[in-house]
Amino acid sequence: MIQVTASEGLLVYLAVMGVALGAAVIWDGWRSRRQHWQVSEDRLMRCPRCSCTFIVVRTVREANCPRCGVQQMVGKRGGRGRV
Image (spheres, one colour):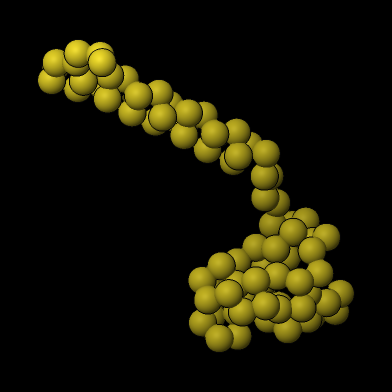
């Protein structure tokens, strides 16, 4: 069995949490750069149930409200919920 003192355990715990936090920051930066939102090319939708306004990629035909989950059809000419 490995003998670990309290100070060594705390040091290992802090190192692991630091690595996890660094990985989360790198992943979030990569994710935000990968998803380029351009309102001129995307659709702005409004949920009919909760009135949440959100952006939908133009190539998507069905969108779910991020707040309440209501599914909406995205049509070419002013589909339901289109702003």
